[in-house]
Image 1 (cartoon, rainbow, N blue to C red):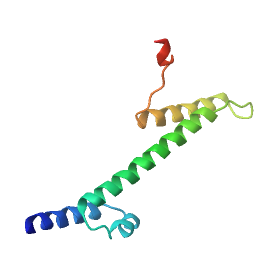
Image 2: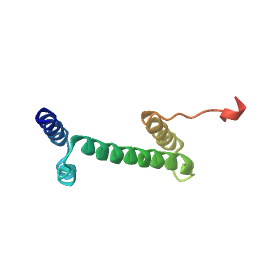
Image 3: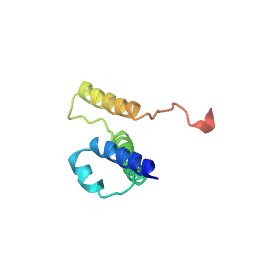
Length: 99
């Protein structure tokens, strides 16, 4: 049991050492490494979903306007497509039910 407690202590502090100060302050009170890991995993998955929703929103709201040059708008659209690709999402030319 002593070995397990020691390893848990080392693991917990190893995880905490890699966090930003603001996250450290919030999560340092968690007692066990597994609980800490699960709390951080849940937080990061939630943030990942929000990032993807934001990028999809930018894609769906994108509109070409006459007030700006076509080239600048194409570049903006390419950046949105790049963000979609970076997040591991893809766009399909056809809905899956047509393929």
